[in-house]
Amino acid sequence: MSEYQNLLVEPGDGWTELTIHRPDKLNALNDQTIAELGRFFDWARTDEGTRAVLVTGSGEKAFIAGADISELVKMTALDAEQSSRKGQETFDKIEYLGKPVIAAINGFALGGGCELALACTFRTASENAQIGLPEVGLGILPGYGGTQRLPRIVGRGIAAELVLTGQRIPAAEAHRIGLVNHVFSQEELIPKSREIIQKILRNGPIAIRMAQEAVVHGSEMTQADGLRYEATLFGLISASDDMHEGMQAFLEKRKPNFKGC
Ligand code: COA
Image 1 (cartoon, rainbow, N blue to C red):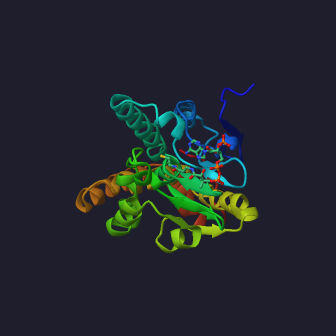
Image 2: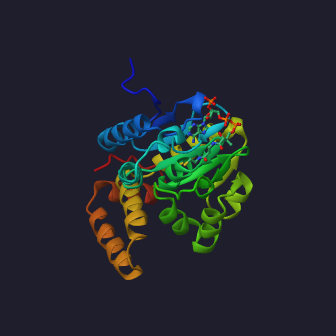
Image 3: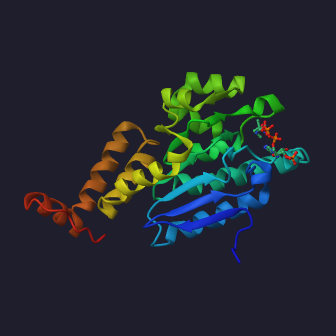
């Protein structure tokens, strides 16, 4: 029996596919699912067979329709603050996993669902996807990182409009503003997202890890500190066998055989 009630976990060829699975509630994130996500990403961090993660939602209608409103409605102020911190800590595990996490948004990605996708390394979407942060319409604000991550991805003006209106935008508009990298048909969403992961994983494993580290952590620094950090990682990776293999393979006009050391 699976150790998860609301997650489906399937191994890919070097990556792991994670499906949020509460289809009768459009995959809404209740406390149980948030706890399971925390456990899953703790596992994924150290699992050697997991060099990337593909996240999607069960069914054809929703990626994740938000935090579970039936739980939110019962919260005291202290519960709500704790729940927001718990959600933020869980989504930090995604952002700082040290491995690429791609959200394949297959329908509604609202509230906490949008926020989970924002914590991923990047996002793809199906043509029927609808993305938004509708919290203000419920009399609350996004509490799982949306007010902080969305402006960093699409810019403050567009983020402010989306957060303050609570409006949902379709996949094409999400693509136009840079919130998702690609829009695919529903049938193609997962195969095409897998192809992107395969393209990533063909490269040197240490190079992928360090490049991800430079992009994710570097973007939180001043540019001067980020450049210094990039140079440090560049120096470190130059001590790897993979660096010599990658360059030697180019010179010998053959495919590199990276070993991850
Ligand atoms: N929390 C808890 N349950 C949710 C949910 C959420 N965020 N989103 C959907 N559900 C449940 C519905 O209550 C319904 O359950 P039921 O069949 O037991 O009544 C089931 O999922 C199906 O949703 P339904 O509203 O009937 O589907 P729809 O196609 O008519 O509408 C949405 C889809 C996504 C537009 C609508 O469900 C919605 O607006 N959800 C809330 C989105 C939101 O505000 N999220 C932010 C939360 S902070």
